[in-house]
Image (cartoon, rainbow, N blue to C red; front, side, top):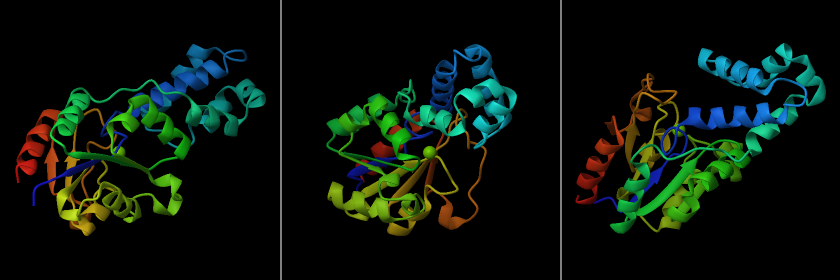
Length: 230
Ligand SMILES: [Mg+2]
């Protein structure tokens, strides 16, 4: 069966996750500029990110800049990060690829996990609501429906009006992206490029493995050509 619909993950598939993180840290640094040096605050957070710190960056930040913690508190900093208007862009070539798919009458979907406010802001910044036929931010269903839950994928099948054998999911994360679509009978593609946070990871087992792997947007485009022509 030829592919009639392509569903994309967002972070590190349509855009680089590190660009969003950098954009969020800039917003937080700007927010605290009256009590601390914004440049220093940004550089501290970015250094932590590059060292692999995840999840407790703002706790560490207020440990190092107590004046920031006294004036704002960690929950407020998380709020600034998640609600900021991000400066992000499609991976080079991705915008053109989406336009080409549309011109060939291929349905386009987006399915993404993550805190809803962040994901909505990213989707708006990228313009995916204009480009995609259906957008499924799984957090809108609840935390238990994040990948690898199949629920979001099933809803997209219904919304796009396509059977599982006409759909393909493109993602980057071998821990969770491919389990549900594999089980539902979709084709799956891992886009693997150096700039991604999880580029070096390997899937734990067959169930989590993508059916295909491509190393560039150009390779992805060529694979789509073959799949669309059946
Ligand atoms: Mg991703």
